[in-house]
Image 1 (cartoon, rainbow, N blue to C red):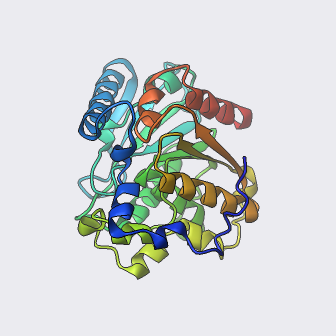
Image 2 (spheres, helix red, strand yellow; image 1 turned 180 degrees about the horizontal axis):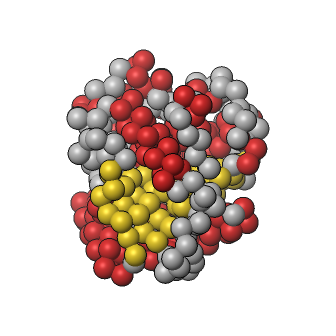
Image 3 (tube, one colour; image 1 turned 45 degrees about the horizontal axis):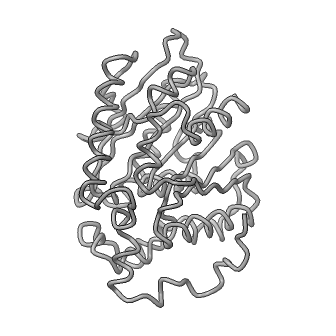
Length: 306
């Protein structure tokens, strides 16, 4: 793939955009080509709700397991038919611009992955305005240490996030795990249509509930922080897959490409993939389909390493 000329040293294109252009670029539903914006969002929610209902009815599971004391600090765990718990764990962090979404409508990939011997975990966290970005990052960190402590013999934790969830997942690359009491057995990251530089979001309506300041945006921008951060000792064993949809907005595509570039410049083992013929929501919706290209990439990554 060609990521030449995308150096973070150049002025970002978004800085030349009007407020209206930024709002359009950072509104994923406006870029859907198969449906109208409202219908796309409704279809996405209905698909997630139905997939979760089916997963809870057909798979071995533990639901609403608390990893902390907060109301939304809970996990859902879905297991393969095998009684063994020495498994790879695929941990999914939902999107929703940090202000919507729920683990209770996020079990898209449970059927295809558990059928192949992978346990799936969906993570709940406090969304805005109750949750701040710092709180959300801390909650995801807490959920992973809980999972590692509860299943210490796992065959690897593979963290996946979509959109805002991809941002939260990426922040785990920067976590100082020695201060957390347990080092999760992190083996892979699947970052789907994510946001890695939060400064543009400051200038969109999405920041009304978030209430980010420039300082908060910069502190929670993995693209900015990774450029200065030393690679952790566990980095060589981790694979990072950065994925974006063909019908994601140009800004979402740019963010993914530039973040991939930063990863490779810093020596991470990273791969970039633009998925053809999918938009911001289909990239997740199609995880319900066993033969979807992304499911195959996920399974290949897991079983090449576990």
